[in-house]
Length: 342
Image (cartoon, rainbow, N blue to C red):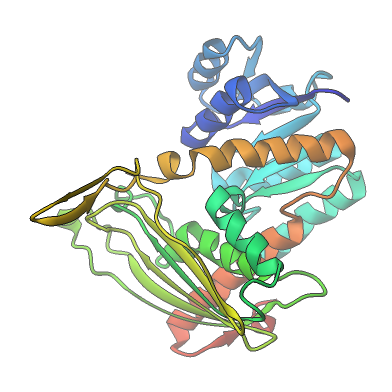
């Protein structure tokens, strides 16, 4: 096929990002329909981009012959159901993280995808950020030698609103899961290659409710040990007063490759008071704007050509397994091997 017809399931914040990109920035794909349990949200988003098909029932998109693939951007607890239904209908699937909330449920969805023989991609957009992709490429080219140490800093400018989470350690499956996947991506992990085998994590609740905290852990450090002995260290905070802080570094036997923060602009002021640069981006929608378009373009290319998905079901599953191990580690106060969580 020359152009992939995509149905968008979920008209919330991230769904709106995907709709805008399909309308303006993604080659080889077109938005064919929008579904959301809130009919008014689906209708509004469809009208904004001149899309004829909208519904409160995602199954209406699956039944439409002009829809070749779907983007699953609905509520997290609906992902598995929608993925399985889409695969059974013969639609290719792009699913925002996580695929589901438990490993058995994820395995059920991946089984449905495998039986249907459709393309499946997980929404870990940071792999498609130009800076982080460049780090990965340089590491893969041997510029740092054999990877020994990965350091990732990921800090939000402010915490989510109260009631955002349903679990007491939501920071790991909601926020740190992106960093778990990024660590694997930067070091070149995967089937037949180096892989995470053990996790140690600690977390605290340091942001008072009066300052936007919700009583759940908002500050965490995770240490991942790979089969090779390489180590990844990840620090997270739900509130960095200076902006959205996103950095990564890989140290190896032959050197180091790193990507610093991306500011709103590159202007620098120098005077008697010192050097001063631009502020950081306000949040992920601005910082990773390009990556959201690039990942959907990669998905559409895989659908059109039958090529390998750049972010597989295995990648999605193991990121959840690492998040579960991190939660267990905090509760037990010890390292947890991935084999313990399946």
